[in-house]
Image (cartoon, rainbow, N blue to C red; front, side):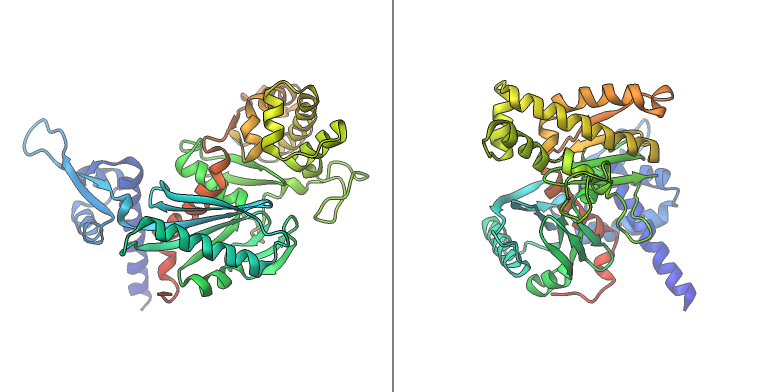
Length: 394
């Protein structure tokens, strides 16, 4: 019995390896896949035949050959299925229907309900998803799963939101609640983790094995990738640098502590600084427009937030020594002005600066990193076979 299970697991691993080669490096011939994977040609032929039959791989012509028949090239078929991504933010809920390469087919955004009660948010999510599906006009849509990004502590294994201070949620079994409503496999993770996944698969970090993605929105979260894998920690909640205390006597944070980094270096902190300086309460997009127009108060607020964000990044560099820091979410939209003073601060104070260049870069995905990451989460889990570990839901 053990031998049978081992053979099944090995086959799935080999299948994933072959498919990933085609997904990320194709078009490739069967011979190239065998060479890159280290698997024999017979195994590759059998696996590719399965993938062709299931529609995940397609033949796209012939490659070059110095002698003999030109090899048939294989490419990934991103339209073999679709996933739904939901990015639950503090002020908005962003949703998208994408193909299996996270290419958006339909997307939209709705305001977060005033009370942010779970039942109300679930209603909004289901209505938004129904709207996405209707717009595609495809009777055989082949929905593979749903990925959900949440700004808070998430038990990734169970899909439970343990604590989302900015939403006022505690111990919410979000995955099971959504699966009951959608009848689809659902995967839930912290929004910074899915942002890091999106950067790794589709953005700035395709060639990086060690990096930190900072989701700098109304709060601050970090997705940490080490040796090509998300670092989750013993409880699955690693990366809460936004709640690193930098001032014991500082203002109270929504998490209950005082002086957390996000009190000083988040979008909320930026807007509160601006309101205090000008008497005007604005949203981030209005602030950004004022900043780009040369508003002096806005410029001073950005400089202040940059100095605190630099302190947080200094802690990250000293603790984890990543090859790069990637700044995303809303503050990533003004990264051209944030990054230079941050790098200057780090070069003067970081112990790692004498050994390697300080690489702080803007997200390639911008404000969409959360929704692309949510879709990427569903895609990643689908291809890892996680959808087959539980009874099918539809």
